[in-house]
Image 1 (cartoon, rainbow, N blue to C red):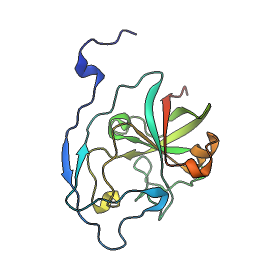
Image 2 (cartoon, one colour):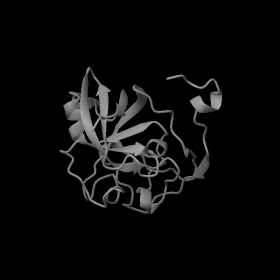
Image 3 (cartoon, helix red, strand yellow):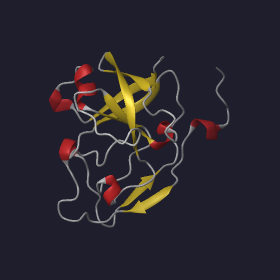
Image 4 (cartoon, rainbow, N blue to C red):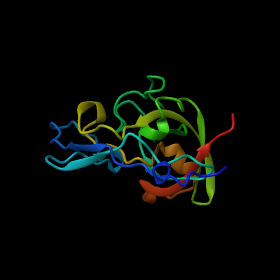
Length: 173
């Protein structure tokens, strides 16, 4: 595959900024070390993600997809909650690609191991700091937000869960 020499094809520039508001009392779930928006702080938004390849570099983060968890509402792909014991992920907006990866599988490579996980949600890079997003900032544009099962399958010690450099690709069905 020939890569474009056009630098715009290789990058993903910010699309804007949103201003943080102070979450109402008890409205930002800090499970899994989630951040809450800070009043007056500006957060970068993106409508795109870096190009997908056979080894797409990303940051793996930790998310709960269960009811009452820090993931907020039900998953966008199927309007369901998912057990943290199931290998499921949310992808940054650009990679989520208007639901085109919904309920598809990706391979995640990290810590010398790999795991196959189902895409069930979007980690919104375009919006945040509101009730729909649990008063959390927008996602960066290179996030694979994963359940506890993914972290366990990669053999990462629990005290190191939260943020890790990984590679991923689309799984063959």
